[in-house]
Picture 1: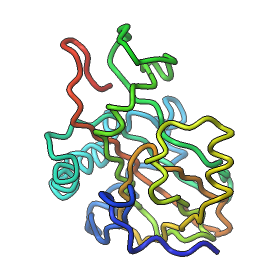
Picture 2: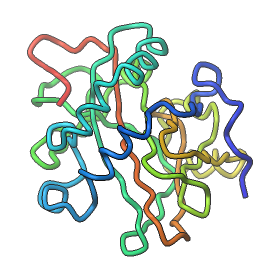
Picture 3: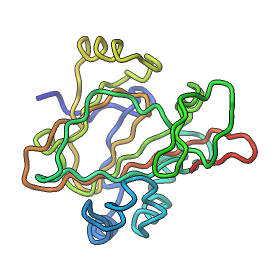
Amino acid sequence: MPPICRRQTFLADGVEIRAAVLGADKIDAIREEVNIDHEIVRRTGIRNLEKKFASIAEVAADQAVLSIVETLLGGTPRLVRALFFDKTPERNWFVAWHQDRTVTLNRRLEMAGWRSWTKKEGVHHVQPPPAVPDQMVTIRIHVDDADEAGGCLLVIPRSHEFGILTQDEIVRAVATSTPQACVVAAGDAVIMRPLILHSSPKSRRQAHRRVVHLEYSSYQLPAGVSWA
């Protein structure tokens, strides 16, 4: 089992764990409202959940969450993307080592350094230039306890410093690094840079592993363009 990620800090290592970011009341509200079998999730997918569920919108605007982001970014945070993941015995998966390289915008606009445009669930996705992920924070709020047996996140601290990597470079970086497991309790948050190398194994537990994945940025977009 990898060592547990507990002593890392966002500013030094690109990843850290914060305990009890959200209280039981807000966690319970998510559990009651959102699940992978919900008609809205089945019909429209796991993206833009803050527009579909009040409990997710409340968490995305929660002062405890925003104060963390604002402190780490040093600027006014804007929500870039809200996703929801739920590993269950029936819906289980392995996530290979990767970086989060894309952001979502309200429209497509040709801009220098912005490339690989795609459209998913009616939303424009694009890989931005390095200045954008440098001004981003991802907060993964855990709705359930998660350890390695439960498919928790594995990370390689400081790997965001490598920049945007090719697949071969990712393989070499993983082979020469020591991954760490983000073992958390419900209400805890894993805070990380988008370009930190991360993966997760399949869950071996007969239980949920639910995560609200929120991305924020202080990057100033051109006039007429906004985060989707």
